[in-house]
Image (cartoon, rainbow, N blue to C red; front, side, top):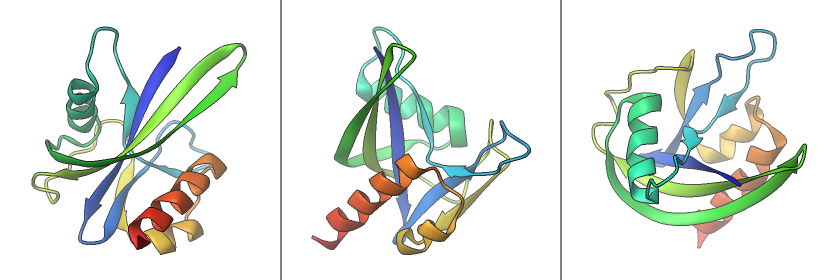
Length: 130
């Protein structure tokens, strides 16, 4: 089973969305994410994924939000969603994405995002209201 970590990076009540660069026809926004390597702890993976995607360092894990498993072509992928704070949020350097934006979570539903992220975003909003 592959494990992927996706991050709700927060800054002043906004969340970081990255513009994908893989499909020139269909632009969509996503969270910083990446696979967990074998023999890598979640903490190591969190720090590495932030460095690889946006060149930012992890300040603190605010909370584990949820996880979701999906099976595609017989392979199971578990995506674990964390809410995190980072150091120096103004110093973003993109590696694999075309652009980024700090989005108010309630406004994010108007952005081109995949349905799976819409579901997780809804949960994120519910937890933030508690």
